[in-house]
Amino acid sequence: MPHGFQRLRAAIALHDQARHIPGLSIWASGHARARAKVRAIVATDRNRMHPHWLLSTLVVTLLLPPGGPLVLALLAGTVAWRVPRWRCPACRGLGIALIAAWVAATPWCGRLLASWTHPAPPLRLDALQPQGEGAVVLLGGSRKLAAREYAGQGATALSGPSLERTVYAARLARAAHLPVLATGGAPEGNGVPEAELMRRLVADMGQDARWIETRSATTEENAAFSAPMLRAAGIRRIYLVTHYWHMARARRYFEGQGFTVTPAPCGWGGEVEESPAGGILSLLPRTDGLMLTRFALREALGQLWLSIRQGIR
Image 1 (cartoon, rainbow, N blue to C red):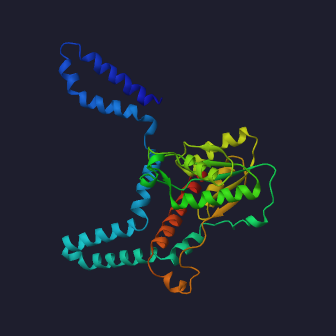
Image 2: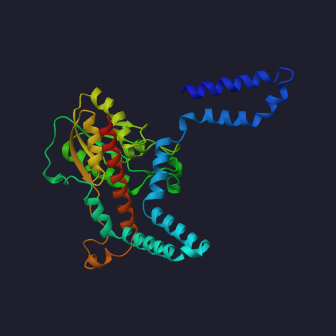
C-alpha cells in the first residue's frame, strides 16, 4: 500500500484513541465525518481513478475540437456582451471559432491531420505466413462504462475503437498462428479492465488470448507493463495492433522496451469517403470527421510530448 495511505490509516487510529482522552473528545468527534471520508478513500484505493488519465482527458477536452472552439466562442460571446468597446473584435473571434468548429468536424480535415501522424502501411493478412515465434500485442482504445445490455457482465463493454482493434487482432492471430497479449486497464477507476473485455472477444473468435495486462492507463504503461510478460515467455518480436494514427507513438514505446515491432495498424476508411457523393460529404460537419480530427490532434500532442521528454533525457 502507498505510504500516503499508511499515514492516513495512522491518522484514523490517532483519532480513535483521542476520543477516549479528556479534552480531546470534542475535537475527535468533530472530525468523525472527515474520518469516514478518509476510510472511504482507503477502502477504494485499489479502484481509484488514474491521475494522469484524468489530467490528460481534461486537457484534451478543453483544447481539442469541439471543446476548444466552443470555449473560444463562449469567451468571445461573453466579451461582446459585457464589454461594448470590444464588441467588434469579439465578434470576429466568435466567427473564427465557428469556422474552426466547422472545419474540424469535416472528414476531410480529419483525414488530412491523420496523414500527418506518420502512419505505417496496412498489412496484407491474406499474404501473411504463419510465424514460428512472437505474439500479437493488442492495445485498448477505451471502454463504455454504462453498457446496460451487458449488465450481467458488469455493465462494461468495449468502445468502437477497441472493437475495431480486437477484431483485427484476432484475425491477425489466426493468420500468423500467434497468441495474443491484450493490454489495457480501468483508468476511470471502476468496471471490468479493458484487457479482460478484449480477451473475452478474442476467445469468442476462437483465438488464444494468452496474456492480459490490466494495470495500464496510458500507451507508455501499455508497453512498460506488457514487456515483462513477453520477456518471461522468451518473446522479442511482436505484431503491434492499434489504429493507424496511434501507431507511430505506440511503436516508439514498445521499441524502447527492446522489442522488434511489426506494425499492424487498423481503422482506415470512413462512412462517406468511397461513396458517390464522398467529395461533397467530406466537406460537411460529421461526427466521424470530428472524432478523427480529435484523435489525430491528440496523437500529435502525444508525439510532441514524447519527443520533448526524450530530448530532455
